[in-house]
Image (cartoon, rainbow, N blue to C red; front, side, top):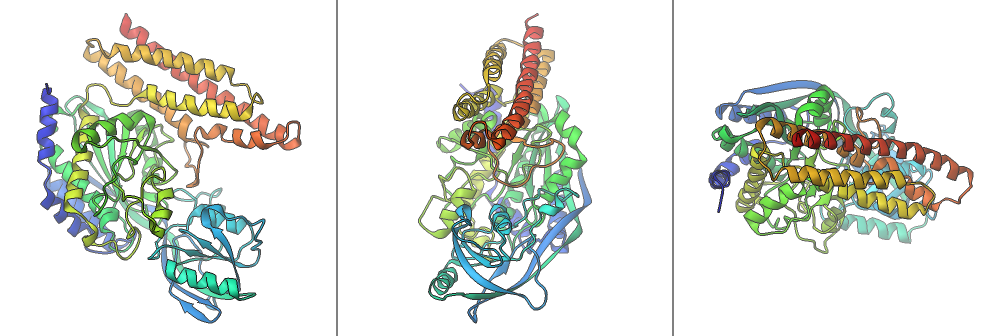
Length: 582
């Protein structure tokens, strides 16, 4: 039998209006929205006006961000001209361009420069222009890179620096020019390089990089219960080209959720904060990173969950099982997706991408995108399957980050479906008496990673304290969970929810943050429990060697930190269990 809250949610979901979603999308994506431009600002003003039409108070702020807008690119191989694009955060050549021998080094994600020296040469790579591949080629001494994309060239940002650079991170920005060609032309170039000794290439690039004012728009839907704690629901407005799917449909979904919940906020136990970013595509998530920098303590103290939205409603986007989640947020997504579509959501661990700028303050996250394409054999699907999810789906569509991201790539039915899923999840997150974040699931995931590191180090690192503390933490979390089956007073409910949030502050950073939690880790591949990632390196080193002792010393110190964080988590949950039992 359905509860009153479930019946009320069902009524809300029925209120999702497909025609309004398409209307919002068409208006937001009517212009190209490069970060910090007038065209982008007009889209922000449109969204702001709609939110105010729904009765919400909005705040539009402007901040300085390091933004990079790609300009013209030219490419010539053995005298033959090939169309190309350059990329955000790559460098410009001078007016004469750059010339050098071209060498092919295989896939961007697996280039081996020991077997194929590229120092002083232009390297040719298969795949999308990603920061790790650029950094690796730079370190090998390449003077420029040509990436071979799919049927269309895909706009990318090639810097690993998350948000605005600092004095320390500025040196990590790319220092060589980068271009991309489409798959068809790339095969021609590979053939020329293969058959022509000392194949010569020439390229010329223009990239406009510097400090610009970018907007951030926020609006709050208040709750009737807790005016401090809030769920953050965010997406970026800036775009590559018209960006109808990326990210017009996502912005439209946010507006539709805002419209419906602003008229039905009576059951919300915690506030909903909507946030629209700039600088996602052209500043490596500069908008969300700036927001974190400006509001770090508020996020740490009061933000209980971040729900992100990107590139929804695509035609043919039938895969709803692989979207990014944390272990502790998986069940929240799983319930709504099962109820609304019948699909069994599995979820994929977050990579270091998307506007996931809030792990330092310890905010749990759910989603970047949601619906994906089935896998196929085309070059785009192969490239995207490694960027999105866990390689089990085909990404957001071959038109992603291309000139072809236009209105005809949207399925109104899929957009309404995705909006209903987001509305259901946002409503559950804001209205559930107990915050729907499963900390036991988070600890069980951490336990699998700890055991994997323990196995790989084969006794070289002592995990006994870690294993014992995980067992104790699981025991207390099980008892914590049993409390929720008993009637609780309002004061006890507040204690329980605060404990869930406090545990997030500990466990999210433990699982996802490598460096200083007040900074931002780079946009590079990151292993689970980053403090212990070097366990894999230790396993390959000869015991007793100089490097072995250096790595082992680092790991011992990092393991002390891991153990102490588990101790803090035990104390946190043990305290509330004992308090509620009194």
